[in-house]
Structure formats: C-alpha cells, structure tokens
Image (cartoon, rainbow, N blue to C red; front, side, top):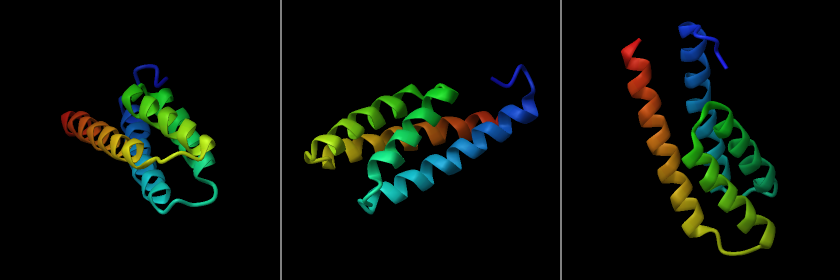
Length: 95
C-alpha cells in the first residue's frame, strides 16, 4: 500500500490508530449509525492488515444488524483495537 515509503507508512498507521480509537468511542455510545461506523472500521482495518480488528468488527456488525446483544462483541473489539494500537505504537517507535 505504501510502496516502501516509510514516511507514508508512518502516516497511514498513525491515522488508522487515531481513527480506530475514535470509531470505537463512537460505537460505545450505541449511535443509530453504529452499523455504518463498524463497517468503516472493518474496512479500514482490512486495508492496513489489522485482521483481528476487522474480524471483531465483522462479528459486531452481524450482531448489530440482527439486533442481538453486542456487549461481548464490543469487549472483543475493544481488545483487538487496543492490541492493534499497541502494535502500531511499537512500529512507529522504530522509525
């Protein structure tokens, strides 16, 4: 995606980290557009290779659409986002 451009890689990772945290905070408030928010998070996660976040977002997306309890899925998504952000922080510190 970044074609070896380290500066661009840092920028993309930092933007994703910020976006993921913001989207999760928004989702935690159970907004009416939760399905759109989680879909956005799923796509952004896949784009940078944060597949654990994408999988957790996908599970949550299905529960939202089904109108089912999503508390466990939210906890799993929170953990996946935290782990992805920690991994991104490690990568960014290396540059």
